[in-house]
Amino acid sequence: MFGTNLLDRRSKPERIADQAWQHLSSVLDSAGDTARSAGRGTAHLADEAGDRVASVADEAWQRAGAAFDALAGRRTSSSLPWAWIIGAGVVGAALGWAVGTAARAAVSRSREDDRDERIEFVDADRPGGVPAR
Image (cartoon, rainbow, N blue to C red; front, top):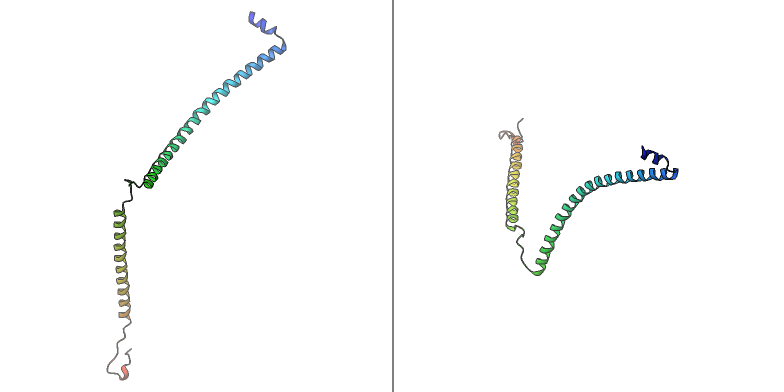
């Protein structure tokens, strides 16, 4: 009761200043909460970005090291598997030759079938070899 009488006796500017102070402190508290929640979300995004940057940086270091080794004349252990590449080329050429040969044989067979159907029989007993109909 004693405290309420003191609050009532304050001047109007003191009451306004007190209300403004309470309002400011509540706004700052809510802003702090918002900043903390935004910070958590940003930290998650920053972690993802950091992971991506780290993997890109690792790749860049590996490539730079390989380039340095190549310029220094050192052999690298991760060269192209030329034996596999040449083997795949030979297998591809053999398959292409086999398919081409099979296609030519199929076309020649179909032409022979067409020729067999167009054969006209000639009657040798007729004068001039006129075809029989």
